[in-house]
Length: 99
Image 1 (cartoon, rainbow, N blue to C red):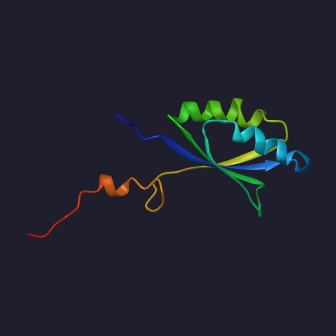
Image 2 (cartoon, rainbow, N blue to C red):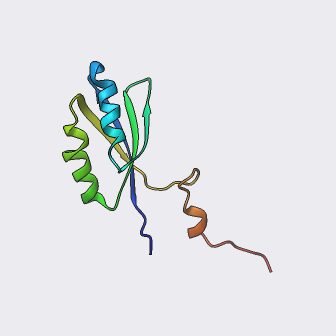
Image 3 (spheres, rainbow, N blue to C red):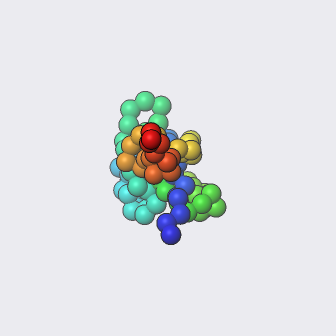
């Protein structure tokens, strides 16, 4: 049985000269499913996947935040995905048919 995984967007502030090195290091982490260099408030946005909150804490504290050049992060835990490639809502909601 596949249990649902914890998904989180981790927005990362990076020391500018280290951007390419941070991207390379993040790319090597198996829990990082998506990785984007962006404009705006953050330098990098990632989508990470873990089995649970404990694994997420370990990933953030002991891997992401230890990458040289990472200044800080802001995390948003995904509560649901009503639209997109990870939309599991349709499978969970029974279809109502008229009789």
